[in-house]
Image (cartoon, rainbow over all chains, first blue to last red; front, side, top):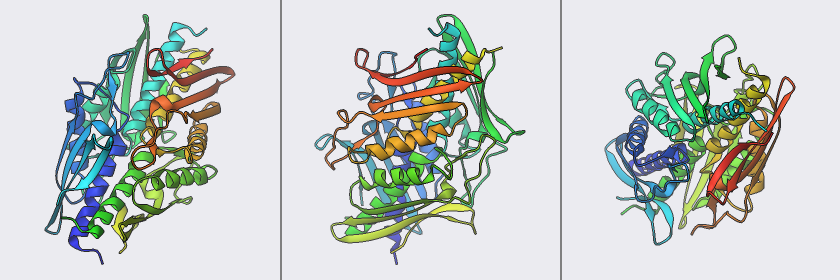
Length: 109
Length: 109
Length: 109
Length: 109
């Protein structure tokens, strides 16, 4: 049997996997990043056991292509989710790790 | 050689295909639909040759699951794009057609 | 600090969230379901800590639209992932639960 | 009223937009690229008015991350679609254009 903390960790993983694979590829610019962040946060907030979700898109990484916009990549996303499974609270994040050049997901607690 | 109107029709198709396949599957509710609509509109507005984009999510079709939210499906999306390729303007829409039970994309001009 | 089992549960959640949100919305039919299953399995197998992934698309739920094909929805997917984090092995599944009409993700161990 | 060639150009755009935004973000490696290509081709082949679809993922661009795999980006995809709308046949492609560093979609006829 899984513990409540294991359940919460599992749910946290689901949310970060969803954020990443639902929204990567979306056109985005400095002007539209805030609305996309809000949509990502509100969307994932609806899923079960979510206490909070925060999403930030790295404006520095957002490079304009020849048509003046960019595209959401995993490396640009900094997301923090807080999950509550029957009182077991777990936080996890998605954040680009420059040392390994990888958008790393990790448990914080 | 393609005409300017054919180019514009092609670009209109790209935008509707992008709207559909980027965002279908996103969790959504009546409370969050407006932000998701705005994010979809702003995102696609960035693409080349777009004069305007309008996206509406059908609240009636948005059924709550056991956890109190829904998921964006193609049938819920009503999108209108207006494309301008060097003066050739074409409008196209994505709209559920109940007669054939299908989220139909079509040129309007 | 998270335990190895909590890490494994977290990783399992990431994989199921990725499967769901990357591929839901893809056109699919009884003829193409096997190739899509293989692509989903191979894709997710690449992610860290995956020991095995199995994906089955429910052919019974695959309804043809007016143009003779269907679209992958979360309810059609039965996925089983086995994760190994430094010897802590956790299995999790995504499976439609008809009692609550929901594509449920759950830990098996 | 749109001409049949305009309709075909519109349908070609839909298919390329769908390929791009459905599959970008999927984990992929040199070992799994062939299956993903087949899944992308078969999936889009199901859509209306498609005569043929060819998808190639650029193995040279496929860089391994620290965990030994990569992720499908738009720049890696070379796709050719052939659309037939009542006898009006249009071909279109998605191909990375290094001169503008952009995954360009264009009509070929």
